[in-house]
Image 1: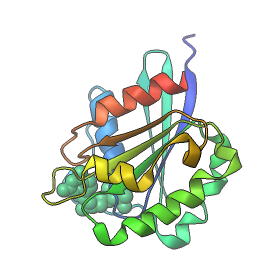
Image 2: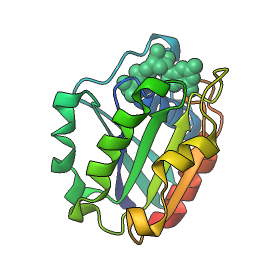
Image 3: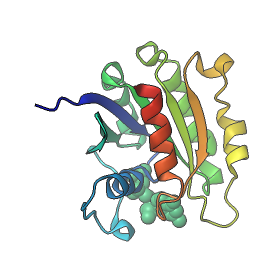
Length: 177
Ligand code: GDP
């Protein structure tokens, strides 16, 4: 029997950041023949979306958790089981950047996530006037002094168009292995 190495990846971020769209796009790109939801019809996560992809011998299981304030308190129930974090930011929503940063700050210091690879996604880069990847990097500042000793990457993506999705997932898979 072909045994897979199984890993668990959390997809976190505020509601409306694009987590569900990102997960659907990831499944579409990596799972041959997967017919996803109509991306334009996706609505915000309430509860949990799950998905999995296989990269050779590696299986990544994704948990996309709801981002509303009352659901953020559930995030840490999943930390102990997680091998990587994807933190999705809506680069077009300047008004909620500080709110997103506050949720991020609370998450990243949790000891259960010590050393776990982190990818911050500056999502919605297709929208005009959005914050750039550099802007997002500046705000979230994923340097060791702030986020501890872990593999970190900040990447610009458009979950809706699928831009940048494959590169990020491949990077994460390399870090986990
Ligand atoms: P979630 O609450 O974090 O799961 O966010 P959703 O995936 O439900 O997305 C929230 C809204 O943002 C939806 O209307 C999506 O179509 C839209 N959205 C998500 N990603 C992108 C993107 O990359 N570009 C644009 N323009 N819209 C996006």
